[in-house]
Image (tube, rainbow, N blue to C red):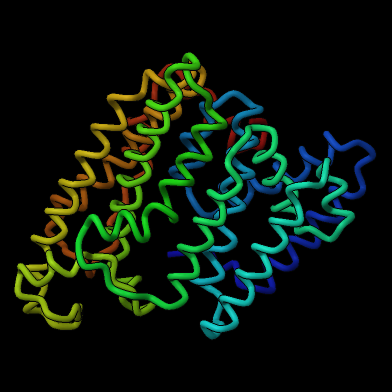
Length: 330
């Protein structure tokens, strides 16, 4: 289940983060304050991604934590805040405007002093420092707007082009710019690998959350796959739908597996100091994907990977980093 960070909690978190960061005398200290707070967001919402990011070098890890917080908050607006669609869109539009205001400002502290939310103040620094195309974040926010007014997706290609591109592929691109390439001529391959991994991760998350998404009025399973199995309208309360729905999940799990394989093929395109973390991400989420594809419990059960299995999927030579991460040393 999702952590209970409701809208007031996020507002208090933002206020406390802003106060701590503005208290710092130097911009570097303000940046470190916001990224440490962003690490709390990551650790709270995603045990798996928190674990794999511990294998990144510190500066890149801090940038990834800033990215995670910047995508988590808009996602929570449409997933968790008990607001009307109109109010969700208004919040997303205001957030988008703050992002545009943040980009031309020179420092984290300058952005905070201009009233930019702390998470965006740090994220804008990442965008500028890593030369991430600013339009990518707008594509992400467009995907969040689509969640406020859900529509079906006719095919898997439509799902990827019309939603996953914004919700996950561009986030993978953010990370590629942070990770860097093994050589200048390899960056296109790194982007290709990021695209494949973004698709794989998003498909796995969709398959895990079919029931949760249905309660929100969303269906991310392609209509043509549902129709092929005789499902006109998804209804998880209809037990007759469960066997054919299981076949849909197996099909999509196999599609995700193919994208994990493609991502792995391009792993060597990334900077060497990031490959352990990327491989760990592939391995941990692939475990979840395979559990979903082989589960006998069906979509009424939200599949997860036990912590022991996650640890076994991580590089043994790096285990020492994990206890330190949990006590805040990393």
